[in-house]
Length: 57
Image (tube, rainbow, N blue to C red; front, side, top):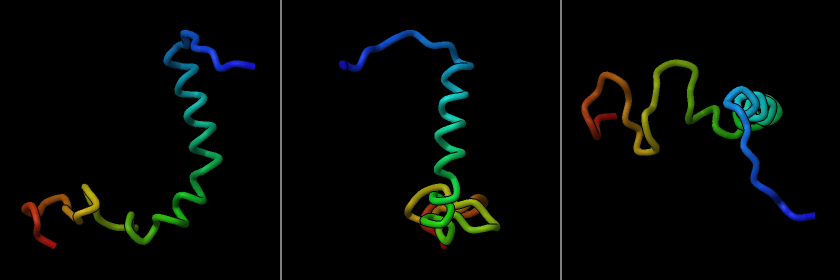
């Protein structure tokens, strides 16, 4: 069997991505939850947060 490319609709792509994310979400949250936090939003691995100047923590 060989992989093949085919044209798919945006709806098909969204459904496939949703199934994949739903299957992986709990593991992802368990692995990255401390970094993601319940409150606030971190923009990047360097710790930039909404409402703060670059580099501020």
